[in-house]
Amino acid sequence: MKKKVLEVAYLIATNKRYAQIKGYFYDILENQKSVLKRYFDFFMIFLVITTVFILVYETKNSLPFWVKDYEIFALTIFIWEWLIRFWVISDIHLDIINNYEDNDLEQTNYTFWQLIRPSVIKKIRFIFSPLSIIDLLAILPSYRPLRVLRFLLIFRLLKVFRYTEDINYLFRVFVEKKYEFFTLFFIFVFLILFAGTTIYVFEGTNSNGGVKNLFEAMYWAVITITTVGYGDITPITPEGKFVTGFLVVAGLILISFMTSVVTTSMADRMDYIKANNTLQKIGKLKQFVLICGYGRISKMLSLELGISHENIVVLDTDENAVERALKNGYFALKADAADIEFLKTIDVDKKVTKAVTLVSNDAINLSIILAIKSLNKNINIFSRAIDETTKDKLLIAGANEVIFPYESAALMAYKYIKKPVAIDAISKVVKEYEEPILDEIEIYDDFSVIGNTLTKIGLLKNSLKLIGIIRQNEKNKFHFNPKKDEFNLQSRDILVVLGKSNDIYKFKLDLQKKGK
Image (cartoon, rainbow, N blue to C red):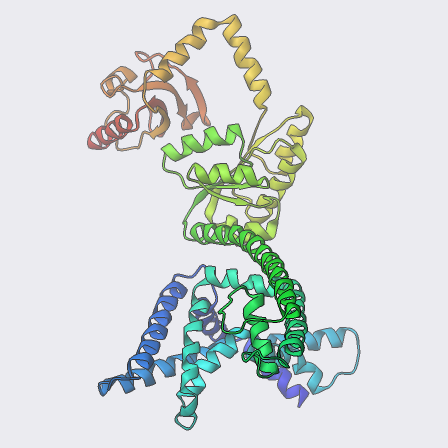
């Protein structure tokens, strides 16, 4: 029997078609990044609301004939949904294989039950999970022999929480704080029993007609401790009034403590919800630039990248830095950029072609570079360095370029002191334009401007400043500010120009029109 089960398990594990079908349903039901799940959630919310509305409407009204068919359709969807969730919640065949291989490695004897035990436990846990119970309560009363339980269909509204992940996250607070809530509940029950019994002893034997039995006394205790105070039962003895005052004060303290636990937990969970929403938005991006560390340099870099319409994702361990990045309109997450597993969740290996590490710690920058390169060696990484001795380490780790911001600032100051005219000229070039950008313009084989000098290709006409030319035929040699009358363009040359984006687009369009 064990051998047959193992054969089936290995057969399923090697069946690609089975894996594709199960993966497809998993994306619909569980994968938060899937577009299909979003549509499915909207569809299920619509079914839930309409079926509950039918239940309320039919209480005092007759329904059209087609409503019954609609209910059967919705019920069928709910049943299939539960069954498919029961299927995709775990991989029985993989559990059996892993369990077998572990036992085989340890050379221990194992039974058939030991093989299937992990899978059975997972399935049982799913059946008795709160959301599964809600699903069953929404399905079973629709069965005709159980029509007397039809009022339980109102629990179908709770299914909405399954399809609204943000609300679901908030309600998980009660699970995470179960110890605190259990303690508060125990104190609540103790106070009710104590106060109810005491008021029954003092008031039940006197002329107070409101306290007829112990149940009435307990009812009074619940109403009083929650500070509702209907006034239908009022103590008349001094002892009863003293107990009432004590219970009111105790109720206020208890409610305040419970409110504090809930609000604190909710605030923490709201941060988690915001991060989850950001993750979902990042998951929809096709490509983005990853910036690790959000300081003053990162802020300026992000601003320039935003002008060129680049998608930007910022990672930082400082919560304040993340908040600043979010306020500036970027996707930002509080996370360790050196965490490989986290980088996988935002698909760095597939969606990032360029990354920048600007953390003010060389060791952290080094670990970030190693983590990114371990996922995709083709990602170009630009890194900041503080200590000159770490430059070689960063380059060996995989950084394509390394800069020293303080050294760059010092060199700029030196140039300003020694050659202020040159610095002033560069400043005027930049200030001449509103939102200037640097761009690369490649000269293709069919462009008619090949062989012409720089004065004839229309740079001045389009108000562009030529910074230099990268000559690919000379192993990407950079010619800085070449003489326009003597420098003839060649095929595959790359012009590096400075100007407004609109002027650059016009110049590119003119070059394409001049193509042979």
